[in-house]
Amino acid sequence: MTKQLHENEGIKARSRLLRGTLAESLADAMTGALDAADTQISKFHGFYQQDDRDQRQDRQIRRLEPYFSFMLRARLPGGVCTPEQWLAIDEVGRALTSGTLRLTTRQTFQYHGILKRDLKGVIHGMHRVLIDSIGGCGDVNRNVLCNSNPVQSALHAEAHDWARRISEHLLPRTRAYHELWLDGERVAEEESEPLYGATYLPRKFKVAVAVPPLNDVDVYANDLGFVAIIEGARLVGFNVLAGGGMGTTHRDPSTYPRLAHTLGFIAPEQTLAVAAAVVSTQRDFGNREDRKLARLKYTIEAMGRERFRSEVEQRAGIEFETARPVRFTERGDRFGWVDGHDGRRHLTLFIESGRILDRPGAAMMTGLREIARIHQGDFRITPNQNLIVAGVPPEQAESIESLARAHGLMADGRSRPRLQGLACVALPTCPLAMAEAERSFPEMLAQVERLIDRHGLDDLDLHLRMTGCPNGCARPFLAEIALVGKALGRYNLMLGGDHLGTRLNRLYQENLSEAQILEALDGLLGRYAAEREPGEHFGDFVIRTGIVRAVIDPARDFHE
Image 1 (spheres, one colour):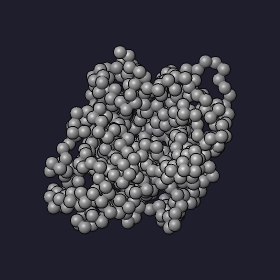
Image 2: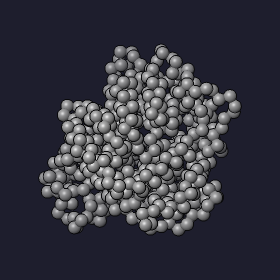
Image 3: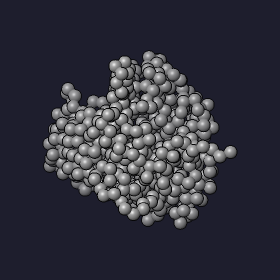
Image 4: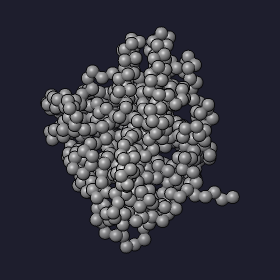
């Protein structure tokens, strides 16, 4: 019996290459929302329709429609932007959105609280400085991550160029974005999507470029990864990874997070062909009936690794060579000043949960605006929601640090768990959130820091992440400790990821209140303090002692 396609497939097929009826929806002043089908198509243009869940019940009682607004996510390959671009980002954010910026784990920024009437103004404001939101969301390739390592400046520049080229190569070719948002002329001739086809991909697609020994991009969490192979300070090619992904569904064993596996080594000039071949294989073999099972990780499980690898080779016209040895030794950001090879300096700032706003004692948005006005290098958003002021001439370092300190942007005095912690947006705007994350994370970290102090673990180098649901936006399943939302005030406690992002964690206890989480962590940290081996990380400790078992085959044992 033929399976029925998911309704989104029909919406995409009828969208006229992502135009839908967006023009009519935007012109409808009787509602703050879009037509239901257009809410799906709008994602390809970079934005999600949301409503303020804090206001839902009150507005329902008052017989008002939900308070609709939009979140827009930019396309910014590798997270790099100029001071001029930052000033434009800031100006648009203050004038047409909620007045804040949020740095994301996909190394870009997003705006929240945009009213429908202001969407076009936001996109125009970004376009003025050559930033767009094409493919910020939707069933296409998303923002391409790139190692933000400020030390190896020449290698970073080369890796970033590949991230940019991959992003451009995998862009949709429809002119719908330019017609709808930038007043472009309608295309008279027949259009096509040579890579994506009329219905694009079955689900979203994520790419990352990593430069060992730093795995700051969590490269194994991506659908497609390119791990730079360096010989004698020269990029000689990439190990190609495929099939990573974080999302899962509570209590559904057919869904699971998965780490990407290695396909083999390629020369640099084969990169774009391989990227397109992986995308087209997912286009043709991915699941279009059940969106929960539509990511590349499930396509590979269904096809088998060897068949998938062979399909990619055939489509790219290449043969993978044996993968080169790779060793990651670090994950996360290097805070404070770091000297580059070219005499310039790089300052990594701490942005808790990526949220940039002005609050008493920490006017971060103002501070970054002041830095951008004098900065002569670039800005780099990290995959860990922080920001690097990169390429600073030595004579300018003192003035930039002074501004950063005055506006609460320095990392000084924060614990390693806080500096390395990640949280998703969750409530009140994310429609998928089951529990709090960003709003609760600072206080949860404070409670965990008290436990750390209590057990004399001042040296604890811990990766702790919190999400409002199991969809994986803050890459929770790669954390040593993760809190994954189950319901309001309730979380699954996950343990056992490693400190390098190369091992999944596993469920330890389910559906806990915050008090129960802290009670469990108190006991676990006490055991760790008493029983750990020299240099042993917490995630390795819970695996060695059998507190949780390592996930070997997630399709079989993640939900056990």
